[in-house]
Image 1 (cartoon, rainbow, N blue to C red):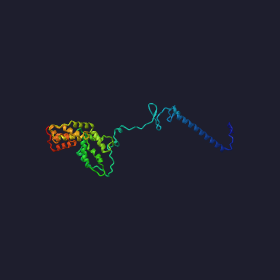
Image 2 (image 1 turned 90 degrees about the vertical axis):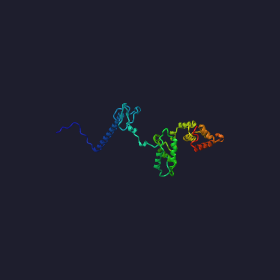
Image 3 (image 1 turned 30 degrees about the horizontal axis):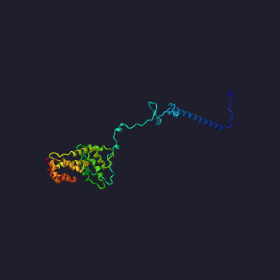
Image 4 (image 1 turned 120 degrees about the vertical axis):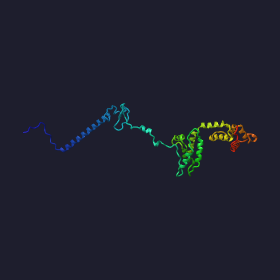
Length: 305
């Protein structure tokens, strides 16, 4: 006969299904409570230790936290100062700074729009200019002479509906060479917008104020050379006025200064054509015309002083 175990038997439960349902609800409630507790502890741990598990005593109290750079992603970079810095992408290499870029190359001249259709500078025009007139910017070259010769050629180039200034603006760079060409190429990008603008800059560069002062001095100190004819002296004298049209001298000074610069023989030739031998009876334009007539008549006037 089997000996009975100690302890009583469980009482008979007539509603076993109902009891099972209650037990399952209690178990689910207990699990939910445990999850809430675990989640709260996890958040406290993250606030205290940080996402990377490193202890930070200022977590959870932003007012005491020292300013640090924001972390990009989950990969902060620790530096020697112990602060996590944002990882910046690398900047341009030295090759970027030392290599020219086509986008940085811009023309010096901003050409105005042309209303005419099919506008084209003829190659023969460019060839004529490059083969006949070239200005290098040398000391013995005259900027005004170059401009005058360029205009003599450019005035013969015409296109229907195209302003003369636009044609000149396209052609003038082809008349420069050497230092003058480099001067134009080193002007600020798009700084020249018209023909007048280009000529102003060209004259300012190669016809400075000192040039004007020099020519004015040549005029005021002019003297007829020994064995120089009246015609040669007059042409040389007027050449200074042609080089410097902004000389500022009056017509009276121009002819009076020339007369006083002549040799006595040349002066007597001029006086012989004036009433009573007195040049003061002539107006400046009359005296100017008279000298022109004498100079054109014969090369031999006033050859001896």
